[in-house]
Length: 228
Image (cartoon, rainbow, N blue to C red):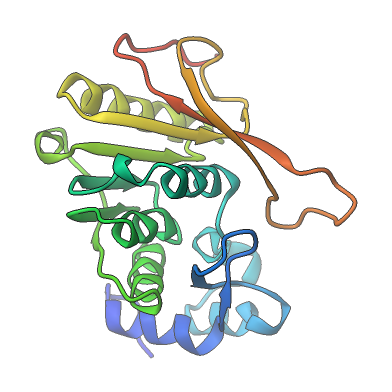
């Protein structure tokens, strides 16, 4: 199967063949194509002409910041109802999926990885909704956005800088901007206002490890300072 070109249908077929559906831990009723030992990620990597280590299918799990935002949507569905929602750094797309399940008018998954965009479509179909996908979002395109959701986008300095620029631009254009994060090192230390907090587990956590505390926060109108 030639995936040198961006062939969404072929990528979706690979995901469905190699990553079986399972309910998302801690979020009853939500399913996804998840990487686990029986998912044969190494064979998927072979199909893509890479190794399991280099594949790094971050789109095959729900990260804790996204899980926290999903908990918030479930507790406050009015946050997404009738609105145009963007899931920035979507990965699995489950945040956008949950927004659609709770009445969003449109939900767009933004992720530069073509496999992530395929996973967004596959997970949306598995949950009975449709989402849109995009490799990037330009500043002009933010004018239509009413709610921007960003889960776990502060894990890397370069990603944090690019994400913060989009969050600042969306906020300046009148969008509501919510961030879900466990306190990663590139998250601004001041300026964000906490709305809620949830305890969730991350991928690979040992059973004895305590859960993470995910904070759901408002991104401020005055751009915050990122850690150096």
